Amino acid sequence: MHLWLSRTTQDPPPPPQCPHQPRDMGGARLLVIAALLFHHLLCCSATSMRICAFNIQRFGETKAAKSSVMSTLVKILLRYDICLLQEIQDIKEKTIPRLVEELNRSHKSELFQYLSSEPLGRSSYLEKYVFIYRSDKAKVLDSYIYEDNHPTSVDVFAREPYIVRFSLPTTAIKDLVLVPQHTTPSDAVKEIDALYDVFLDIQKRWNAQSIIFLGDFNAGCDYVAKKNWPLIRLRMEPGFHWLIGDDADTTVKKNRSCAYDRIVVYGEKCYKAVIPGSAGIFDFLNKFGLLEIEGLEISDHYPVEVELSRAKSLMLQNWLFILVALVSAFSLGCFELTIQTR
Image (tube, rainbow, N blue to C red; front, side, top):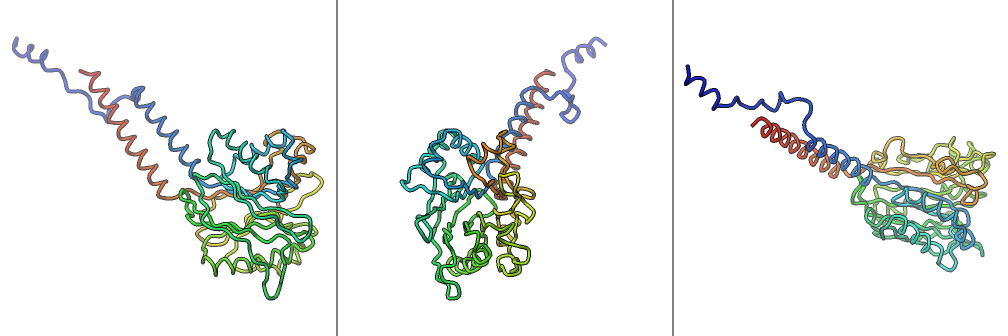
């Protein structure tokens, strides 16, 4: 009897198994799990691709000199990985470099870069297309200005598209072509239709499978009536997806409602990469609490935007990382419990 009592005091009972441990898994495990979830959310937001088109309405030195305008523009552009800017009248080539400098200062990095067309137009009134992009998420592969000499429609564009081909290593679309267009309102139907000729030219040059047409098409109200749509090949030919609807309002003025600015996606892979519900208008008046008169100092247009999903390989990598980390955290909890019971 005495021997049996001695053995029970010398041999402690085995520790409980991990599957039956209490809900309180230990502070260390909770911290690890919280950190991993935060990392996953950060990765999700950081690797998708948000693209915009924004007519800034005669953006030159006068407008850039207004600090309130510049600060709001910076806040708007920080939302995007690539943004097409239109109506850029940067004659001395100072306003866009300054805007990009402000972006990098606010972001505390040197990630933002830009690519600009030459001044485009038929008269003394000239505009540039400018792409501002994050260099860690987009790389410029090639670019060219469309040669507007189609046999059936010579000089159809007042401002020829400045076509840019991007490499997007972190998104589902690795190779993307962006085609900007700011039409002349009175020629909107003819110019939008001619974008189909631009599409054919891109196919001949690059055989591109993912293309986005974007910009101020003036594709609404009096400029493009309902009866005009059957005349527009970019609308009628299969394979083109218009992400901004005819009932949208891309204008800042409250007494006007027109779907001038559009985003059109070509290619099923590109269309499938669009995050559902991401295409729309960014209402910076409501977002930043501005009055209409304050918003009109920036532009009479809202930006239109769309978001492309991140690469599947990165998604799998993120989930595998979380799975491994959760297993490690679970093992850590078992280790803590074992120590506590000894």
